[in-house]
Figure 1 (cartoon, rainbow, N blue to C red):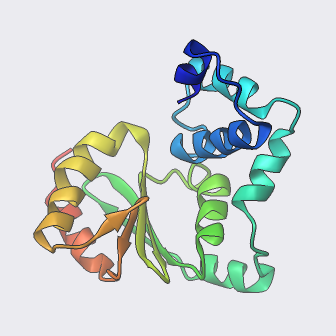
Figure 2 (cartoon, rainbow, N blue to C red; figure 1 turned 180 degrees about the vertical axis):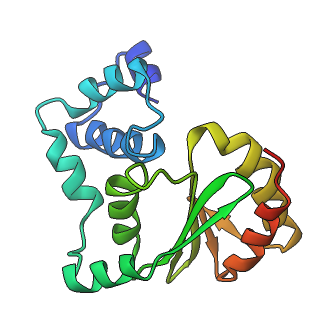
Length: 171
């Protein structure tokens, strides 16, 4: 949309550009999968705003520190077929994003399964997206007829079925 607006000399509002910056941040898994092109776009999308405002937009709900730390303490870790997998329950997506943003790489995870009120949200290391997410988890989701949107498997909470499917994964 941004490129089309440039081609047609359409000036986008600062709010619209900022929304692109927020989307770019989340769509690139907090820049983990971003390349130079995405960072070039980010510089154009931010305009006069600071990157900190993107983070404030993403984390719009206050995270209860004590509860969040307790939830992280209850994280279950699995080593399945050479994959480092974690499962954790959160109260909202902000807690999920905080975990991904701060702990996913620090814990050397390949797959993170989060149980949130809406259902299950999965984060997979970029190098495993095709092999794991598209070849194993998406067929499982379709077989179980689970509705999915924005990475959430709505009203689905049985992460053990995901773990069972991952046990069949051949690295």
